[in-house]
Length: 436
Image (tube, rainbow, N blue to C red; front, side, top):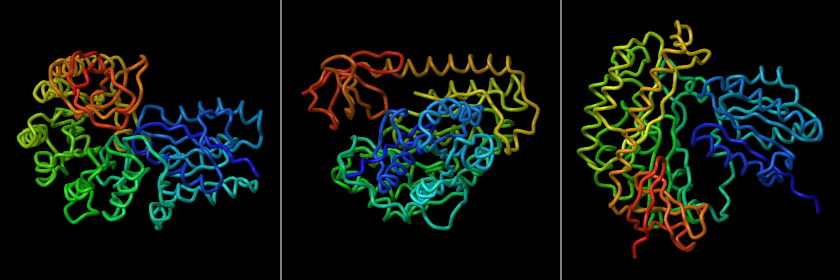
């Protein structure tokens, strides 16, 4: 009997890449691959890349340089680059990195089995098309093997917003939504495999239009799956938070009280320059409406500091918005250019100015995060336990509000949502006591 080939996948970036890595692993499973967590034990290494972070492409080339040692030791090792850097840099990767056997964009990974057969025959394979065939239709049904209790499920890809700083429309394409019946079928398969929490994914997930009722309609249908206990979604654009979705936060019990709603800046001048198509006042009004529907909702957001042309007054407006909203969590970055985006051609702010502003902004965000975590002490929340902790007898999970929570509990709580009384708050996690 031929031994199975081993596949090592390294995933960078967003939750959608995590989902894509799972699907690529499943697709190559049909070609006889089994996953391994060791690169030096693999017959194929796939780097599933992200183009959002600073110098993303150069980091991929650095990683490829480190993999050269493994390729030299094992010439039969196949190395592939997938994801958004692959989409943006396809032919350049092939030119600069001769050790790479295949490059596949995020819309073409259903073609991996054919590409694998090509590289096994001695060819190099490149596919960064935006094919007409739907990759989700082409991929085989997901295996029924037992899964972790929480899973990601992509329902929407691409973006039509064309924010001036963002590469997503160029690497993921325009907005496409999966039909609701196919999403629901995959969700039921996940639940049958032991999943009790599903996070719906999309670059602009609340623009989902694969259901007559939009994302809210899809959520309500998912909520009818008895064994599915929790529903989340990310990432949202403020302009697509419609009345139905706001209402769902108030009356859909399975939709968790956590919302990631990026704003990027509190300055109307910067928001216009970023092509965000909303104002700070409109964002604040939206937050007010969502909190009226679900008063205990925890908000997170994204912020860019040092966008080209940002003044001290623009930055202060961002701080003011943060003080007004009070975020439980946020991601913040210094602006960095993305080749091909409109903002990349504009004069950049000095590095020291961006660093100083980012430090001040992060101090404020950290204060807000800690204050909200401290306010959880004494409350009882539901926690979905996902894995054992580092300490014997300890289990770790996520609260309704997406806080990491650790508590003394038996291993039998794994995969269950349990009532936990919060008794302590740390920088990045909460301590709890199992009730009942």
